[in-house]
Image (cartoon, rainbow, N blue to C red):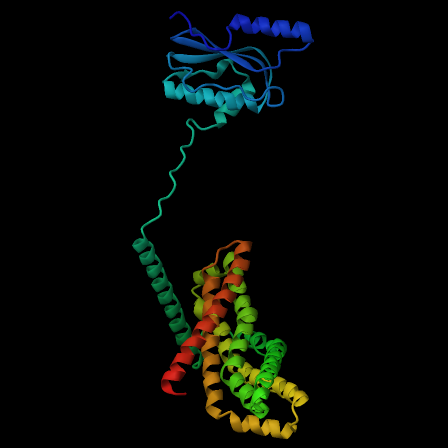
Length: 398
């Protein structure tokens, strides 16, 4: 074969077409065309027309167009009037085709700007990675189980470290600052009185209203005092106070620690040899553990007050009679049980929030993600722990 032919046109035909179009329309040939000419051992790619996306789009280049050629591919761009990224995309396809055919690629005949842009592209096209295969069911279950066990061990170690630092603080050898502890105590205690009081008052009022509506059918409205008192002291006040503190204080702990992690403050503490457990975690967890039982007692009294207000307004009973029935119907061990639960809830909220903050990312978006995750884990954990306490109480007959 003396030369290579394509389905387009020869070099002379391209020039004639450009001249004819220029004479008839008064402007250069617009449609981008190409032709492969020359001997098989010296192929030459002739480009003509306006190689722009707006005036013609991309001209196709078949991947097997250079199957019969060998040697080095050169270019002739004398008939080309204008070009943009469409030319670079076409040359990229040509370069890939020369690589598949084993030809050389000589860009000297191309415009200088096109040569520089083409040099920025990689030598070969990136291969598409195969889609990841989903592991078998047993492998997924095993991986999740190991991850849960690993996280449980990490949280347990963190709790033991914090307890050790709390014991050392009694002797004055802990790295905890008193100022940080007092600040966290204020934020977890007095600053939360309003929202804890409002929530528990409304819950107690709702419980009394529902109890009155149902007990009135049996002429037993007086027992609504026992219902509100026992329910609030045993379950409602502890759960609602813990949920409020998980959303208010737990989310704040996670956001604060994740922000410190993003600002590299945690790294600075580690460099100076300051234990994170005593400097950051201990004030947070200890303040929440000290304040939660007090908030529980406050919330229980406010919830009983809410039930008292609703009951007095709907029942024909004196305030003294309602309060006497409440105090006689709620034994002391119900408060002890609620105090125990509230302290465990506080330790869980503090540990979970601090752990979520420590394992968060370092970007601004990770701060919000850590706060949201801490609140969700805290609320779900509180409900799960309350179910465990209910089973234990039923087993022990409490």
